[in-house]
Length: 501
Image 1 (tube, rainbow, N blue to C red):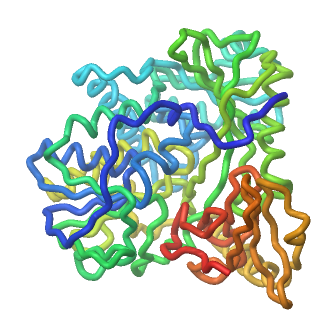
Image 2 (image 1 turned 135 degrees about the vertical axis):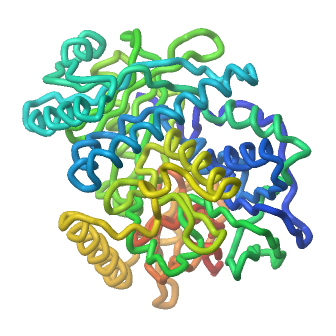
Image 3 (image 1 turned 180 degrees about the vertical axis):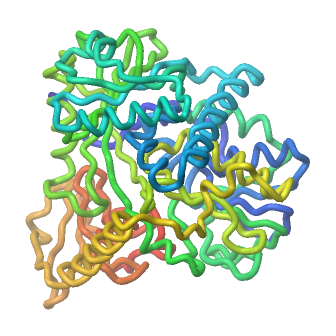
C-alpha cells in the first residue's frame, strides 16, 4: 500500500486561521499558562470567561503537539481502568474519576452547540474488545466494576462483532461517548477569546523561579499563578516526575476502505493494539482512523516506518483499504497508576500531565479542575488527580523500578552503540549515526542533498538519541525528548537543542 512519505495529520490538514508572534518582551499577568494544546487552550478560555488576565505561551505552534496528532476520542473508557481504580483508590474515587470524564464530554458538547463550532462532533458508543479469550476474565472484572460504579455500559460482544469486519470474542461498551475534530474545536475557542488572552507561539519556557517563567530567549513572565501544561513538565520541581512518567509512542493512519463503520469507536485489549474510529471528510466520504503499534519512546525494535506498514496491512486485510491518505504519530505519558497528575504542586503553581493516551477527556478535565483551583481554591476532583499523591500498589512500585532500570540501561547502552551509517552512504531523506575522527555524530541528508550534523547526546540528562526514520527526528529513549534532524527541540522535557557539529 502507498503510504505518505511525510507526516500528515488529518486534524492539521487545513489552513490555520491565524498565527501568533513570539514573546519579545517581559510581561506580567494573573495567570501564566505554558503549553498550547487542549489543556492550555481550554484553561485559558475558561479563565478568560472568569475575567482572569492570562498569558498563554507555546514552544511551537498551537495544537502542534499531541493534541494535533491524536485519534480524538472523547471518552471515559480509558482501557480497563475502573476495576484497578476500585482496588487502588476505592469506589468513591473511582466513581469521581468517571464523573469527571463524563462532565468533560458534556462540556465539549455544550460548548460546540453554544459557539456553533463545525468540528465533526458526534455522540458514539465506545468499545474495548478482545479477539481471543485470553483477557476475558479481565474484561468481565471491568464489567463488574461498571455495575458497581453505575457506569452506562456493560458486556456487548455481539453488537461490537456486528460492526467490525473480524471476529470479536467479547467487548465492553460505554455508551454515550463522543468524537470530534480537536483542532477545529480549539481554533474556535482561540477565536472566541481573542483580545482577552495574550497568546505567543514559538516561545519555549526554560525554567520557573518562584512564579516567574523564563523563556529560552531570555524573557520573563511573572504572574500570580503558573499552569504547566507542556505535556512533559519542563521543570521537575521536587516531584521526581521524570522518574514517574513513562513516555510511549503510538501511530495512526487515515484510510478509505471498502468496509465502512456505521457507528462506534473501538480499541483492542489484545496485542498488538488496534484503535478504530471514523470521521467524515469535507467531501462527505468516510475516513477510517486506525491507530496502535505502541512502544516506549525512542525504543522501537524495528524501523519506525514498520509501524505504519503494520497498520496499513491491518486496514487492507479487514477494511479493504488500498491507500493511506494520512499518517501521523503521537507521544503520550503514562503515570505509575495510570491516573493523570493534575493539580497544585507548589503554592499557586499547577501541573497537568500523564494522560495515558486519553488526552481529549483528560485535558478537558484538567482545564476544569485547574480553573476551579485558581478561581475558587478547590475542586471536587482534586484528591483523585493530586499530583503529589503517594498511594501506589506494589505493582506500581515494580513498574517504577523496571522503568527506571530501562532508563539506566539505555543511558549505558547508548554510549556503547556504534555508528550505523557513513555520510557518503546517506540518501536524500535518510539519517543515521556516523563516526568522524572517532566521535559519534548524528547525520541527515535533506532532499536537496545537504548534510546536517548534530551531537546525538540529549540535552536533558545525557542519554544518546536514536534516529526515527518515519518522523525524521532524533528521539531520546530515556525520557522521550525529541529533536528535529537539525537539532531543534520538538518534544520535552529537553528545553535546549542538540549541539550542531
